[in-house]
Length: 361
Image (cartoon, rainbow, N blue to C red; front, side, top):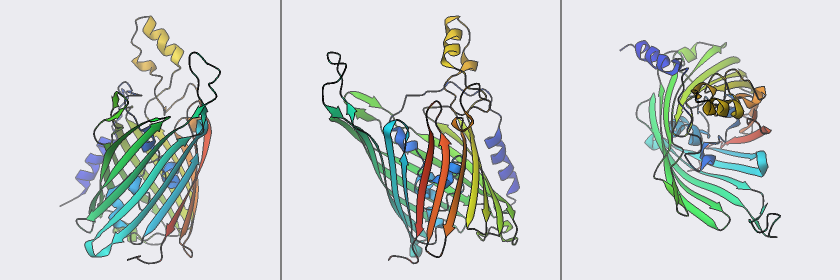
């Protein structure tokens, strides 16, 4: 059976020019820290990573790909975020060779600095402080169903705390990963963060559920033609291209495009761009349209990643860059990514990956 008609169809679905994105539903889901990628490699490629996911960050980006890993791996990430937030991730993956699968465990947290407590009666502060924090602990398992297709899932137990109040819940991710066998094309899908509503005090809120579809392929591999037969061997010069389309429950649909150039599978440079609309307009212009009784949909200020920006800087509009170095002699990978958040600070990110030399058990 020829694969190219299916491939062309999936590519067409991904690249459909959806100019009229619907209105954003920003603020309708909680525990937003579950959306933050721990992988600087993925972030450098604008998170067009669901069909790449060939390291321990597959715990986050596609648990269906974990079964493709050959060695135990660990990843750690720390981000000094904007507005005094700190983010951390730790994940460990171990292949189960007898079962053609892999298991993984992970912890994600997001915390704030101490903040001064204020009240209507004491707007300058009560003398007390409080903090907020989120944490999620996950268990994952992935299974090869064939030599080219694998599936996997993650169950996460979540806690959110603000001062002396807290909420607990759970969510799950399910991913698939398919090596088409045609050249180096991979196709993957992920449904993330689906689960029951959490309840904070007396206010329920839904999970930030997301559906992602993606593809990846090597455009350049100078050493040999093994990629065209589906091998994972890499050449002296490689150029990996990846794209993804995501449909979140609480925001606009987003297109992600990423490139990674690799030299001798040791040094890497990355670039990516997210797009979820044509323009980001300012809030005043949006309100002016509404107050005049006009259709304001074309002036949506919630577009986070515009293709053409009227406001904001380049790296605060969904563009990312990154770099990495792999040190196979000691099993270490160091990755860096530079990103921005619209109207806030630019962010420097670092993540470390480690491959264990042999199976631990």
